[in-house]
Image (cartoon, rainbow, N blue to C red; front, side, top):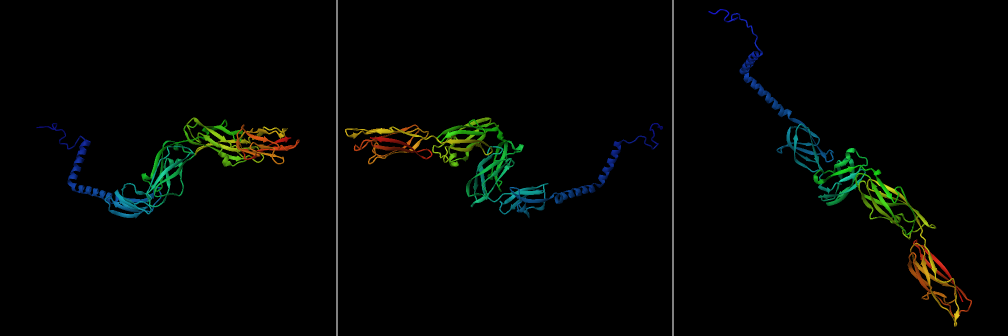
Length: 497
């Protein structure tokens, strides 16, 4: 027989120990499971309804977007276009105009786009996603191609010509334009003849790329992109692209020296007929080469002579174009050949000429002013070989005959031309003084500086002439100086019997 101590508190009906949380969770889980087991069909139906509602929303409402369609040209300007929206399989969904909005589900579609004057777009794939705007670029309906090369280097302020080939497959001449893009768009401009008309076939055109003098820092450097495009077209065949470098040019780093002067050159006094040479030197202290520097002379003022003709006196040797490397200099020779026949101002023996000697490219110019005073060269002719007084005597009833030579000499500084020597005597009947062939004139073409000509002459008095007779003879030598002036030298010879 057990006593009450074998099973303590068994009969008291009171639980003395609390249930743990795990015990409680087990009890609740058991209750929930019992509920699920009892109502599982209803719960499953509710879940199915929720999923159906979610997918229905997504299909009918949530996946539908308001999509706007627009068309622009290659320059971003709106184009009035007709747009046809197609399913991915090609079935038409809607026909709309550009800038119109329609409702479409997210997914893939195709579009046809047509606009007057533009190439049509056929069945182009598009995707409607979170974006609500579809923009289509249109090219003009011209069959043109562009070829050429983008120049590889520039300096600030520089202008470079670029030769382009435009091939037109159009049946008639058409007008076109050019557009500059890439880094070049902000650093330079493009200029060309307008309107630019191209004929069927190949057309060579010249455009000028002009770099701005003041550049943003990010415009300077290497591997910059430059693109020239036919306006209205965007295909690769209508584009010329290349990489270029752009440097900042500083004109203070260029120095021009003519002779020993870099400000004003004084040629001093030169003479007509002179050949004068001066050193033309240009120094480049920039960190890059300067190409195609053009040397030139411009006459600004002249006391006499045509300015256009005076400019022809000057030339450069070996040529008037040169390249100057970085931190270096180049030298050529400036030659001035003053014509011996230069015409001086009336009544003056000098003529002042002012001008400018320059070195320039498309982006800089350096000038040196100059003055040249041209002097009339000395033109002098002397005649000798005959005495001022010649006395003849008779021997056996006849007067002596004298045969000698006149010496006509150029004692001046330049070539003289068109010589004409003439004799004039006041004797009655025959002339007592003649040239060797019995004539009164003796001519020759020219006489250089310091040269002379021997002209034979004869003095012969008629035997019937009485004693104590006097005849005055004059010898005149006419010639032309370099200024086309006719000059004369006269010599008197008195012949007595």
